[in-house]
Each structure stands twice: as structure tokens, then as C-alpha cells.
Length: 268
Ligand SMILES: Nc1ncnc2c1ncn2[C@@H]1O[C@H](COP(=O)(O)OP(=O)(O)OP(=O)(O)O)[C@@H](O)[C@H]1O
Ligand SMILES: [Mg+2]
Image 1 (cartoon, rainbow, N blue to C red):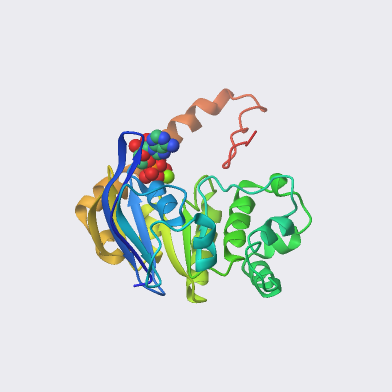
Image 2: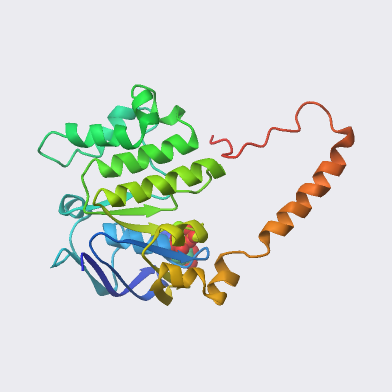
């Protein structure tokens, strides 16, 4: 196994966020963690990358115990992370942001930079644009591209599809598959369980700090309990009904100010 998380417990003060999580990721896999808000998905990723400390349990990576290793050393060991909420540097250009991802490397990052631009042509077109002026979807691409600059063995992704328009969601998931095809192992946290399970080999379902299910992703897609809890069977109809009501109300709608809700919202 490339990455083994064994019975980890993590606390925020006295509150236990992880109550014994065991997850393993084999080389070449896409493994997904799904679960409701607060289940402990982000905390699990942060603990793997060294941003949170364990109170019990162990993390092994590439045959070595990294439970107490400093975060930056985990990056050089081969653990890359694109954090939830993106965390790019708004005042730096796209290219400077990408190069920040390779700061820990001694060798030139020219090859990784070329690869990032190949995966994300949009970033190549916008090399000298300030990171903060990129759209939400573009910033997400930038965050993933930056994580790849360190040439990680495993890439940890926290909600890469969050806040993106449906077409971009599709695109981000295909790019994750492509990154995996090119040889990077992926541990993917997603609320968008349907899409995550479609590209993952295996997945774990987390509930309030525990793993409640672990199975091949295809099996979870067919699991009635998983379908009911995370794949929202009835949602489609509700959305259609709501859309119907709005279209009837809009007979006398004013011509301006009615279409100001954007897919990605406005980040202030
Ligand atoms: N900095 C913090 N201080 C205190 N409690 C925290 C902190 N961060 C997370 N928690 C708590 O730990 C638990 C797990 O949170 P975590 O962010 O890992 O969940 P998650 O599965 O990523 O949820 P979401 O889907 O909403 O992102 C939650 O109960 C949360 O309130
Ligand atoms: Mg989270």
C-alpha cells in the first residue's frame, strides 16, 4: 500500500473529529471519501498532510511511518494537496502560483510546468494574470496545477468540484482521471458522490468521524443505503418543480436584476 491510515483519532480541543478512521490507498488508485458535512473528510486529509496532529493511530506512506513528520517534509516525501477553498495567492500571477508549488524541489520544475499547462490549457493562456482575478473554476484548476508541481506520488483533493458550474464539474472530474492515468495516485474528497464514485476505484463512507462502509466504488453506486443518503434520488424532481414555479411567476418579471445569480457566486 502506498498510503495507510490506521485507526486515527483527531481532536479539536476536547471534541473528537475522527474516532478511529482506517483508510488505505494503493499505488495507481483513485480512492474517494464521501460523507455528509462534518463527517471528518477534510480533517482526514489535513491529518495526512500534517496540518492536524493525531491523538492516536498511525499514518504510513511509502513504507515509512510519517505520523510525526513535519508537513513540509511530507510534501517532499510525495504527498501533494489542493486544499478546500483553494488557497491560491491572489496577488501573484498564475505562473508564480504554479512555481510556488515547486518551491521545495531542488531540480528545475520546467517539466512539471509544461505538464500543468498541458493539463490546463486555460492556465497557459492566462500565465500572467493575477491569481485572484481568475474565475472560481480557473482558481480550482490553478490549485490542482500547483499541487502537481511538486510531482506528488499521491494527490489529496478536497472538494475540487465545489461551487463549479455543471460543465466545469464534468471537466474537473475528467482531468482528475487523466492525472491518475498519467501515474498519480489520488485520494478524493467529494460531496458530489455520484461523480466521485464514477471515477474512483474504491471508496469509503464517513459518518461522524468513523468509516461506516468501504467497498469498490461501483458497488457503492448500487448500494440502496448509499443511494438514499448520498446520491439524492428524488432531488431531480424537486428541482424541476421549483423551476416550474419560478417560470410561472416570471410573467411580469422586470427586465433587469432578475438574472444576477451566477453559478459560482461572487467572492469578495
Ligand atoms: N478548526 C476546528 N475547530 C473545531 N472543530 C472543528 C474544526 N475543524 C473541523 N471541526 C469539526 O470537526 C468535525 C469534522 O469536520 P471536517 O471539516 O473534517 O468535516 P467534513 O467532512 O470535511 O465536512 P464538509 O463536508 O462540511 O467539508 C466537524 O464536527 C467540525 O465541526
Ligand atoms: Mg470538508
